Length: 129
Ligand SMILES: [Zn+2]
Image (cartoon, rainbow, N blue to C red; front, top):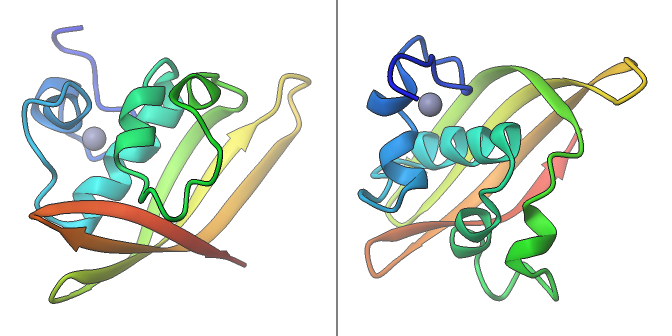
């Protein structure tokens, strides 16, 4: 997928944006990068292992990587509203727009919380608005 634009709509190509994170070649350095890459993983589908690995074990419950592979919604647009980082804790507020299989459109507005341990950011949970 050489010149494909990144699903997170950063305006960069996939190869120069979320791909290095999804392929495991690099770890996101900021909560914003992690959030965007997780959005791309959901948007593309088949990146369940990445979503699993970047989800804190204490918070992902009984979910398995294969549960996260499905592309249940068609993700259309991402707006990052706010991103904050303080030491090893961070949060990102975003609105993601999607359409369902029958064409119904909706949006998901969330403030996600992240924690960095051993240099790796992981998703904890989110407050849904
Ligand atoms: Zn991206």
